[in-house]
Image 1 (tube, one colour):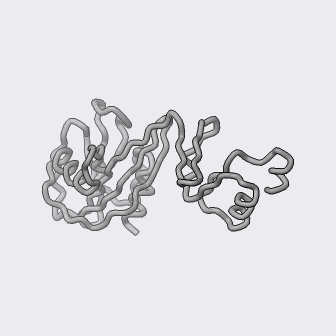
Image 2: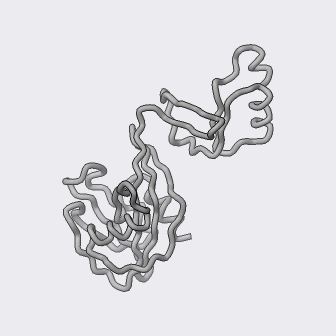
Length: 192
């Protein structure tokens, strides 16, 4: 890497999922900005990227970051999927968990409970697990998904306008449903 720097061919910066010690050492010696811990699938060829290695920040220009919750409900080995209606702003007709935007100043756990009440009329559900947010890129949007798993004692669902149908399925059946991006990975992680 140092040789690349001497020949004027070094990269302007390095972005890693996990930095190997030899790469980190080469970047330091060559004075090349570098950060790690970045989900590289979020970056697309042609993206304008701003890299601040001193603060460990990577910004992708013209890509909005939206924080949402996704709640997976479980009852006797089955999970709830909801088919998004034609009236919603994104992923019409796709299957999802109970999901929605986290409002300004709202904790993700509060947003999860609010979405359960609004979308399916469930005031009571026992939190079984929540995991670190997952990020998925779709065009000019990076979705930061805050996943939650709730156990419920029955399969009662009262749909609102955001959904056209629901199904209680075995997790192994998810591949039969066209879902929102990343839902299958989220369900797998929540059920580990």
